[in-house]
Image (tube, rainbow, N blue to C red; front, side, top):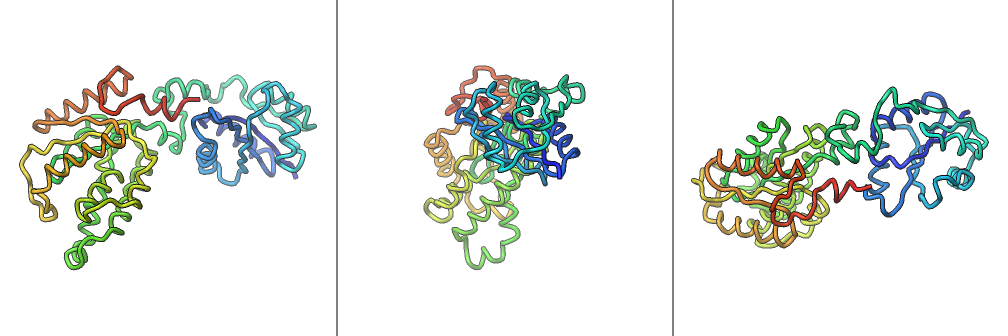
Length: 340
C-alpha cells in the first residue's frame, strides 16, 4: 500500500491546490494533507480544513503547527513522521521544497505542475484580488469572499423590494426572509397559541442556513432580506425581551454592510403584518442595536428608485475599496477576515 503526503498553507485553497491533491490521490492508496497553521493566519486552520474536506472527501486532512523554518527540511520530515505515525512513500508538491522534504523522509518526490501550466493561479493572486480570480475558487471558498449585504427594517418598510432590486442590478442572488414563510406555514398554530421564543430560534437557524448555502453560488455579492441579528429584534418585538439563543446564532456572523430602510412609506397590510404602530419603535431599535454592536450601516430614504440609487452608490464605493463614510465601518471584510 502506497501512502502519500502533501503540505501547504492553503491560504486560501484554490483549484491549483485541488489539482495537486487529486493528482496525489490518483497515485497512492492513502493521501494525507498537512495544513500548516500559525496564529497570524487570519483564516483559521479549522475553517480551511472544513473547506478542503468538503472539496476532497476521502482525503485525510491534518492540521500541523507551522513553527519551523521553511528551509528546515529535516525538521519538517521529523515532524511529519511524528504526526502521521509512519514514514510516507510519496511526497507531492508544486515547489522545490518538496524535493528536499522527500529526501529527508526517504520518500519519492513527484512534482505536480510547477510551472502552473494546468492552472495559472496562486494563493497570492487570490489574496490580492479574489474577485478577478473567482473562477479558481471552489464554491466553499467563494462563500468566504462573497460580500454579504443585509437589509433590515420595520414591517412594510420596503426591505424585500430593495433586496430584489439590488440583486437584479448586480446580477446576483438574494436570500428571502425565512420568518415570513414560517409565518405562513405556522399561521394556524400561531393564531391559536401565539409566538414562542423557540419559533425565533428556528427562524434564525434556518435563515443562517439559507444564507450560507446561497453564498456558495452568489455572483460575488449576496443580498440578504434580514438575518439572524434582525431576528433578535423581532424576538423583542413579539416576546418583550432578548433571546440569548437567537443572539448566539447571530454572533460571529459578519456582513460588509447593513442597509436600514426608512419607515416613511405607506403601510401595506397583506394579511400577515400586524405592527403598523410598532414601525417607528422598531426602526429606533434597529438603529440602537446596529450601533451597539458596531455594525456598518446606512439608512436609505425616499421612493424605491431613490433608495436603490443610495444603496448602489454606497455598495459601489465599498466594492471598489473607496473611502466611504459608513457608520460602524472600520475596514472591509477581506482585510479583516482574509489577511494572510
